[in-house]
Amino acid sequence: MSSILEAPQPPVSPQDDAPVSLRTLEDLLNDLGGIGPSRVRLAAPVGGADEDSLLAPSGRYCELVNGTLVEKAMGFFETYLATVLVQLIQRWSDYSKIGFVVTEGALTRLSDGLVRIPDVSFYRWDRIGSRTVPRDPICSLTPNLAVEIVSRSNTRAEMERKRQEYFDAGVELVWIVYPTTKTAEVWSTPRDCHIAGIDDALSGENVLPGFSLSMREWFESADAPK
Image (cartoon, rainbow, N blue to C red; front, side, top):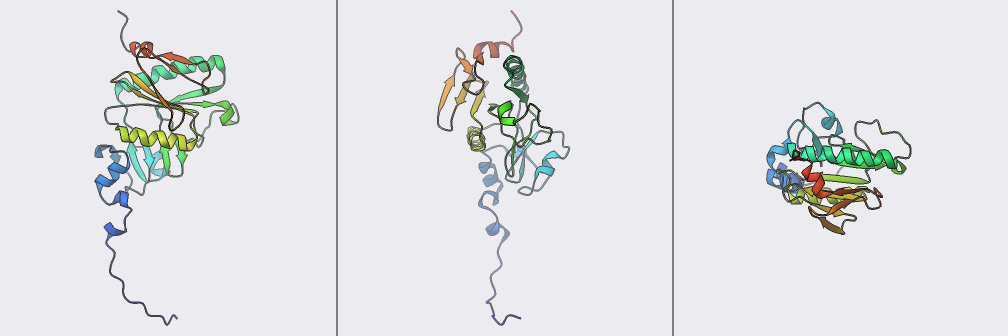
C-alpha cells in the first residue's frame, strides 16, 4: 500500500476536460468548416461515432469526421452534374483503360477516423495494384482525382478543409466545381490552382492524360435542346 498522501484535487468540469473543438456546438461546427447544425447527425454520440456508426443503415449519405457523422450535402442539380461527369470520364476510361470512376456514395477512408465521400473520384489501376475494383464497404485506397460539386449547404471553409485532407491522403488532382458561377477550381497541389471558367476546359493533366471537358458543354447538357 502506498504511504504517499495526495492533497484532494478540485473536481474537473466536463467542459474544461473536453477537447476545445467540442466544448460548444459552435466550436464543433466551426471545426467542421462552419457547416449548418442540421448536417450533424445524432445517430451516434458526437465525438464517439466510428466506421460502424457510418455503415449503420440511416437512409442518408454521411461522412465521418473526428468522431462525428456529417451529412453529405448534395442538391438535385449538383447530382445531375456529377452523373454527367461520371459518364464522360467513364467513356474516356473505356478507351484509355487506365482506371475507373465512381460517383457519390463511395466511402473513402483518407486516414484513421476520417471518411469522406467525393462527388466523383477516379482511381488509376496502377494505384490499385490490380485490375479489380475494391470490395470493402469503405475503400482504404485514395483516389487520384477527387471532385467536389459545391451545394448550397457547403461552405468555403469546409471545401478548404476537404481539399487539404485530400492532398494529405495522396490525391493528385482536386476539382472544386461551383454551379452557381459555372466555374471550377483546379488544384494540382495544395498551393497551385487555376480557375476554369465557362469558356474553358477541365483538363485531366497527368492524372487523366488526354481527358478534356468543355465547361460550357457540361453545363449546357442540363438544358433541353433548343
